[in-house]
View 1 (cartoon, rainbow, N blue to C red):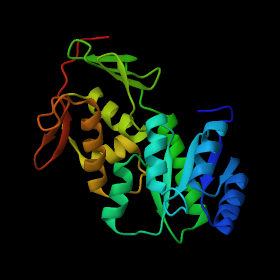
View 2 (cartoon, rainbow, N blue to C red):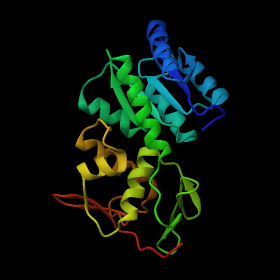
View 3 (spheres, one colour):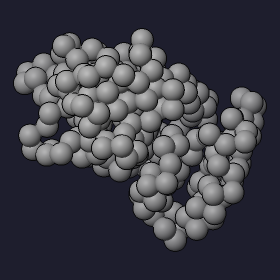
Length: 237
């Protein structure tokens, strides 16, 4: 995740917000890299290779949503959105483009630091199954838990940390039907603060990345009225 494991990129055009966030993060033991617009954010991201990005959605040059999409194409680095939008649909749209969590303005700096810790813990402490290599449908889909990598037809699939954890949770127990609450608790952790519908957004994203036909999924199956289960046919490692 970069040369400094606790390196955080903070992107916001309001200097006072950056200053406060930086102070609290540094007190929490993190190294902070600052950016005040989208162009600078992309440059600093390439230079610093941070462990996590805190990203304001309202930037003066490039929208935070576009920055999020660009970063997600390049990396699985966790992204926490800072947003003044409090509507559920706006938050879900942010998660849909690859953000891992969100904090609405105005926010408590202590709460933000707690979110950073929680997101980093979820991304680093991935569930470890008994086998380090899970292979399904004659190797069409492979989950490599040592590399934290998912491959489809031998090509890497760029999942976010939360998407990876949810897919791995389902794949570990292919005969179990998980409720959304169970997926949040087991896959994302008790400290995950999100809507039940957030799981549906993650599942939609996972399907778009691993399913040959998203309208007729064969890996992540919906169990109507309950939740989801994994449908892949495991072929050992």
